[in-house]
Amino acid sequence: YKNDPLFPKNFMWGASSSAWQVEGAVNEDGRTSAIIDINSKKKKPYTDNSITADHYHRYKEDVKLMAEAGFSSYRFSISWPRIYPDASGVPNQKGIEFYNNLINELKKYNIEPIVTLYHYDMPVWVDEMFNGWYDRGIIEKFDEYVRTCFREFGDRVKYWLSINEQNMQICYGEWLGVCKNKDTWFEDKWKVNHIMNLCHAKAVIACHELVEGGKIGPVPGYVPIYPYSANPEDQIAAMNAEELTEKVWNDLYAHRKYNGFIQSYWKENNINPGIQEGDMELIEQAKIDFFALNCYRSNTAKACDINEEPQEYLLNKSGVKGNLIFPKVPGLYQLTYNPFVEYTDWDWEIDPVAIRYMLRYVWDHYQLPMMITENGYGAYDKVSPDGKVHDPERIKFLRDQIYQMGLAIMDGCEVISYNLWSFTDLLSTGNGMAKRYGLVYINTTDEELLDLKRIPKDSYYWYSNLIKSNGRNW
Ligand code: BG6
Image 1 (cartoon, rainbow, N blue to C red):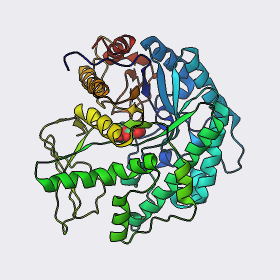
Image 2: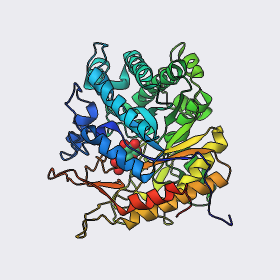
Image 3: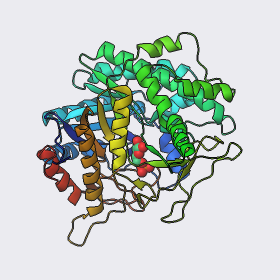
């Protein structure tokens, strides 16, 4: 294009968080434990969410900083164990009060709340009662929970998100706490996934029933997958990877049926996904209004032999092993290193074009409005001797990504909002407070609890300038 991209007039600019990663106050006002509180600590003892950014107590200060930056949206999640601390079916008024206060505070500054119903924090009591997502009993309890959210907050919250990154929860089942039995997980995951689909469907239906003017969508974690070369077999491998990490979910949400690829895959591998009578009719009713998309990076796939188990792939930068999605799928694809992109300190591909590719792809396939609900740069930020936090790499990352999103809009995609990850620093899923994403620095470390002072980073001011001009001041 000859000119810089232009953004639609009512485009919503904001940032994103999730309850268990930002709130802290895990034992306060009636909240009971979530499985992720325990699992993350088990994995790495410093991954402790009991305080993190302490947003639960400091939300007013945080929202004020958002308003000063010119935010028009904020995407956050509601914590299920705060609303339902136990199985009694009686919601916790204190939990409801917290979200009422947060929503009212946002509304005071004309910031549109975009609310995720489930972002990894399964209540321990649900897990004990229903073995997590393994037992269909969870569907009714999930329905009870989401209906309470719609009734309590639906007068002010019009944009709802069902389940955060269901695809990633299935792909990284063990890590995100949904995989219970390693030996049967290859088959179990499709049963678990089906139950999650039913919960998603319930949420969509209930939202339309209870929230006047309410809109709801799913939140896939989207990692575009490129073929390693022009070898036609690499192209098919990339398509296979795309199916098994993303498209199977997105087709289900948008078309409300399982696509041909996955049905054939189940048949070939003798997998029973646990579909019962009436399930597909329920899913059929769950018409989504938009796609919320989380995008950080891209992956690259090449063909692999039918007799070969895919291997962990080596990244060029540090020689560490890269992420391996779906390890036991011989013959379908092998993820590999991409020589055309840079990598972050955590070996995530830095690839701004991925966001344009994703938006084009999702728009072409589903013709539904889209919003970005996560996109960001994790780094070891430090406070400089001048008391400021200089984060030029994050500014470059965000500028490049937002520019590419703008190009996708110029290409004809309907995008309504951009919410980067994250507003303040918060707990990373696997790297404590050390992997910082925020526009605002939180003064604390994994080793030592400090004063939790908020220090806007250089990126905060850059972003503020950009969004106040509706994407003109690059
Ligand atoms: C997204 C999740 O996939 O990635 C967030 O929705 C997460 O919860 C984010 O924090 C970044 O991942 P990480 O592991 O760097 O925290």
